[in-house]
Image (cartoon, rainbow, N blue to C red; front, side, top):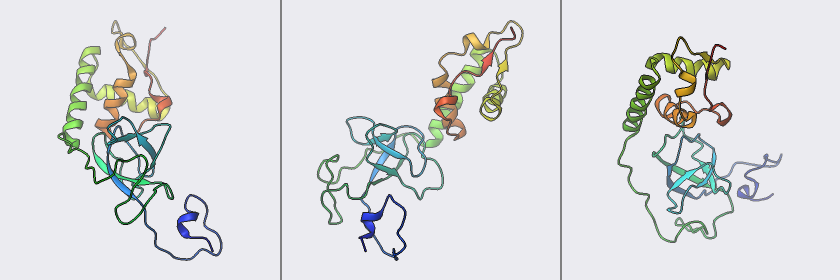
Length: 191
């Protein structure tokens, strides 16, 4: 029978039994909202921030019960058989030798959420729509694919700005992960 670590990433064979394995982990910082088990890699040269990139190193701690918010710390589980040495302190080509500790985040999740709420409130004021009405319009768009029609002389569609920035703050404020293909404006005119 093959070593269990050699079988990870594939379905378990019929003759597989119970076992215990070592998995290399490293504390990292989320570059954006990450889901447990999501495949991620370095977002920059500092080798502390991870996110959705082409060259991945492993997965976000699959045992977490909630998404990891931007700037929060979590463990990155490196892919099996990717480390080049193991003795409770491991080495890997993508990491410098030695215990490098990711910098401490100075902003809490609550602070980021408050900052995003403030941005959304400012956006609502700027386009002349209520804060709750703006959030409900976004929820309708995500749930029902239903555009919100602007009323009167207010030009919500034309003044909305960059939808990516809105969805960034919406994700942080609500804790909802929005699929990339849904991150567009949800306003339309009545014409």
